[in-house]
Image 1 (tube, rainbow, N blue to C red):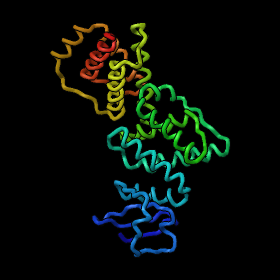
Image 2 (image 1 turned 90 degrees about the horizontal axis):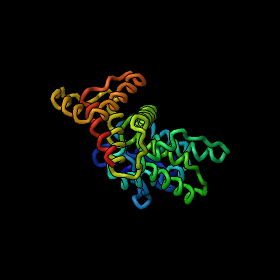
Image 3 (image 1 turned 30 degrees about the vertical axis):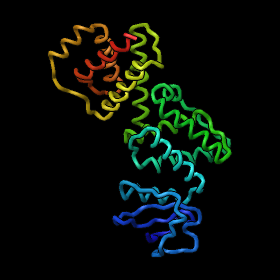
Image 4 (image 1 turned 135 degrees about the horizontal axis):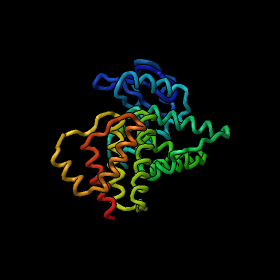
Length: 276
């Protein structure tokens, strides 16, 4: 593997066997060498591959000015997230999360900490991702001797969610608020408490997550199965009325018309939730 460009003493770009540019990290890997030289493979610590050229250029620009230890800890967090979730994450997370973590560390050193208004919702609706955020905070403390707050664990979790759904952070905020308010509508309508540890509650939240994602993307289910819709609304009249209230909330808050099929499936999940 030959070096294409020297980014800094610890980062170089190379061309792989498929002719694609990759970014290679390793302490001192770029020191005392130049373009065209064969890369010493024993110095390679991490190889980054980006899906598109624009993302690759942004990533290289980010790496040029960032401390190596920030890059290393971010890469370790992302590797951990991939192994725990066992699903593909958008490669742009190497840009967004690395940038966020580096900025969070700088803010911490300057005595500036942000609150996270979505923290409780993140803990409830994105449990796996929040646990990764907690792992990230512990890892940063272990590696860099900085104890970031639980608010930062929440922010890191949202970046993970963002990479799972290939949405932008504003969409993730909208999705989280939609889930929160839909849950509150169900609680208020039935004057019920919910067991947040129950499997049915987690299934309900998962359904709301994907519904919210479809609402924001304006890509809702629609089969026009009138007989099925009539059957479910007759079998579960109160749950159906509650789902109509959620439909009205979404129309008012997001100016999106929830389809009849989405409303019916929501009623089914509400019924299942009430059977706990």
